[in-house]
Image 1 (cartoon, rainbow, N blue to C red):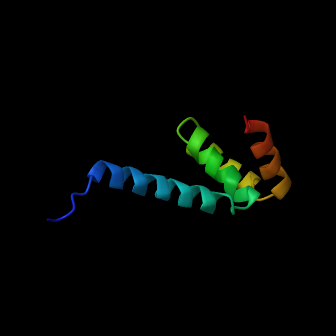
Image 2: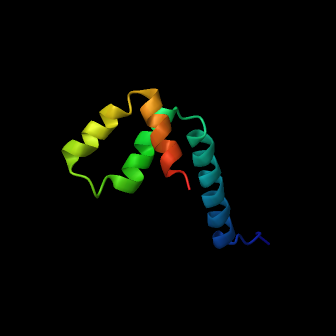
Image 3: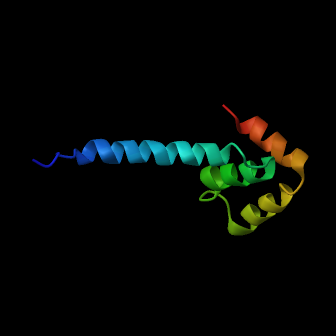
Length: 74
């Protein structure tokens, strides 16, 4: 008799593994990458495109990126 597979358990496990892989990848990002990622996630829809692009350029400087991450870290 074939073994029954619970798809809910499989999907939940797969989702958890995908989340772990994403968090592991994010932990190896540079401060500039983290700052731009945070900017995209939290502010992209609230900022005019030109301001968003200027902010990305502002984060080319590691100190600016680090300060932004630090100031917005809960």
